[in-house]
Image (cartoon, rainbow, N blue to C red):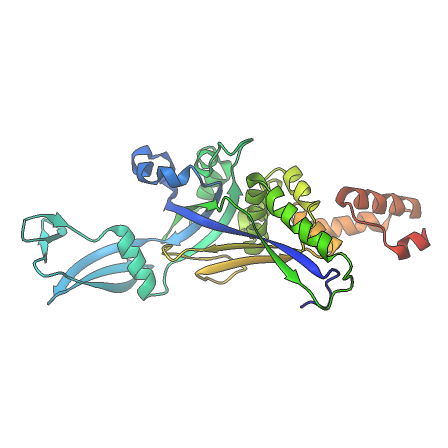
Length: 345
């Protein structure tokens, strides 16, 4: 993996989500229901809109000291269980299931606990990512919930319809408020003369990348990774962040960006039409060459139709126009002119 690296010291920016909030899309307008999550929500600047299967409670039963709960997901029955402490019995009254202790106190397993147990026992809960976005504001005062309440894309996804048996779900993520830089010392590098300077440069990047840039890079990495259908459909928001922030990050000369999402407490496995369902996702992008960097930091990928139109237009360029276009692209992405190109010009 080191053969094509130019320098003996290379740096990768490592970003990861530290905490999350999960709730159905309609709950964004329910202030009372969101109160317990408020402290986490205020720190979340990344949001994922996705579809998840509806989970229906069917019933419960007790066998000796074990509680069994029946659930239905996409017309398929599942049963999960927990050990019952001594002195607690399952009761059913007027269509209501509850657990009764010796003091007469009623309780039951929470919905979160049911989802967790269902996810641990069966591989049936998947979060299909439809859209990824962010909200930060000028000073971090704007959180993901603020954005979602005014978000046209959420309404558009709802209007286009959610598949039968599914519902819209939201995951709000907090990108860890610190930066990790992974430094690799490469014995097979082409250039071994700049090690000391590049170690210092790595520390500068570590302390010189602010929270707004971290949020933007995290968003861009996972949009590239999951390729959500509504990010590709609404190209003006791919990524949804201001492109100036990404261009500022472009100039920092990272060799790679590695972003991670992985929570043991999350009952759903994230997936998309391009990524299989997993508990832990790592979006890793090599940025060693100017071309790789330009692709990662550029706006939305063009469709085949758009690329065909672009190819037709470029095929009609004169020699002078081709030279001008090449110069403009180099200026936009700060791509250095190679020695060979200088000879030709």
